[in-house]
Image (cartoon, rainbow, N blue to C red; front, side, top):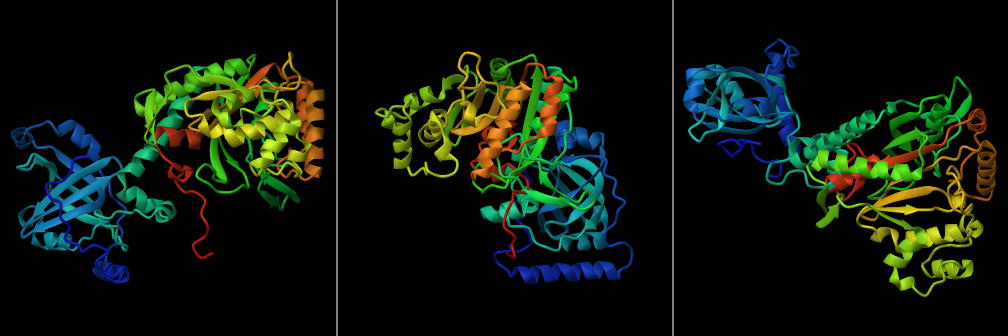
Length: 514
């Protein structure tokens, strides 16, 4: 963005004065405005131009061209910088597109109005009209013929030298973070581009965007602890959606062969740099496909999105190269352990006792309600999560997950102990989960029953038995592949953000008064 000729502020910084005193002074100014009569917060603004549009159209015009053919503009935005020089003042105005400098003096707006402008504070929202010109330094500016206050800012912005640097304050007061930190604005603009690109890609491949319920009578579609609420009129407990999967597959049964949803999910889990209890995913399902097709499709999709957001299929993440241009690696759980965790080379990865001993050495409770029932496949997966997952930097598909941890996935025809399932890991984080869908109603019913038994044994994340979903499958679902992509984690990669809170506008935080 173009910077103004001036770099000083007439206002003292919030660090130099007591904030309460500054707020009191601003309230006095507002009281004086109210005392004059008329609206203190006018609601008839009608800006005809935006900062970025003007800079793009006229930045290369010469001073002489602008003087010879005056361009009249009306612009509105927030005062971010101010410099007063005797009978002349410079303001930097910011709208959502960028910044533009305003110039005014006693002659252009009159002495009384100029005196009023001198009392404006940083953060005030104004509307100005006049003609474009260029300063002696070549700065495109507006020579104001009129200017008025639209909104009085009662609370001072963080000063430009210190900004808003406290991490928790940035998350809690995102509205201020967006005002003063351009990098934050860029992050969420990139998030918007990511979603737009994903939707475009899905539409180009004949997928239908749909909406499914967020309130579920039975939580399903993932292994997670749900949030519970109560519907008074129905007199029943309801659950916030943990995944849209079972509803989307009902649509496949109904004859929509390709569907997707950009969906909000809610899981009553802990907070971390990777986890927020409310998060965004995109799930998609395609009839007459399988997990191999899904991997190819997902790889192609992520390349296109990366290029749309960053301009390239290669990028830096936390100081290290991340390359989407090469074919994504594909490995089984055992292969990933063997290649990425040499410290467990002596462990027999196909022996249950050996796996349990190694997990115990690493502090994993193998006697709890979940792991005590685990077979070799689930134990291999647990060890993978302990020693290999975090080391998968470049895109890697981990395939052939055990049946016991994949209750909705189709078992392999060649090996019934594993499923046609993959998870995609990038920078050590799971980004996507997909599989050939289980469309055998009787097999699915048995899997649900096993989940019920696991829940009764103490597994809080085990699934419920969904009788209506079984009924849907009994009508017949064609061979189908489905995948879910974590949008928040994807945006983290594309914007070089270390925490999921950096890419969620209003992340979950403990109440200030708690």
